[in-house]
Image (cartoon, rainbow, N blue to C red; front, side):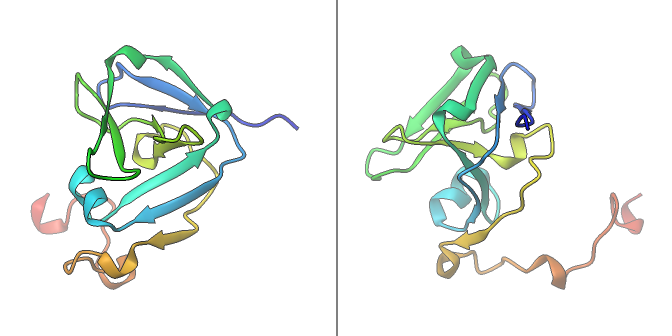
Length: 140
């Protein structure tokens, strides 16, 4: 059976890529560095082998930043719109794919949350807050 290609891109569309299963893992990371670079409670990342990743276009506008004092932390973003895009790990043994940059369903769910003890004090489990299809009724 053929592996389904999963496509992804940045917000402006200048960067696009493809990944193919199997995926190494899918994790939420609650570490302070991931919160800083996502501007959110956690990063949502898929991990794939380098031979399961391919740039379609825009590799030349994707810029990787390796945090100097960190052993493995890095991020990559589109220099046109600032969106997070995939990057190769500093050791080169896997590609980190920001799940929010996926255009297609990867047909995998997160397996775990890492750095849970470092989670933001304001993080609240999704089961504990109201949910709306779009905006809350008082903001329509």
